[in-house]
Length: 69
Image (cartoon, rainbow, N blue to C red; front, side):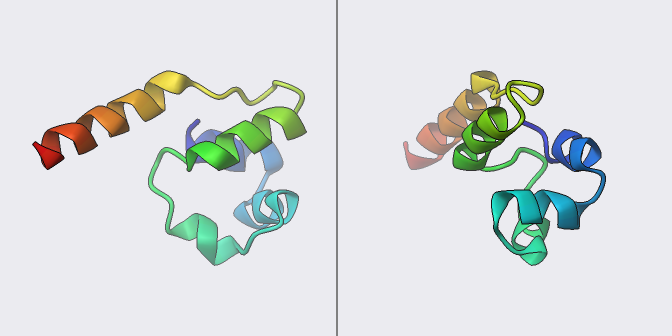
């Protein structure tokens, strides 16, 4: 799930943070793909309007595996 899409859905980064019950600065440190746990939460909160895309996270895991090798 992309951070930009989430912010656009809720209107502001502050509104997204409030929905997730986290601080706005916490969102600032996310990359372009939001943490997987938060993606699942947002899918549930939005009733599937925002959807978890496993492909975003498989790429990250593949890169981590290559870095460990």
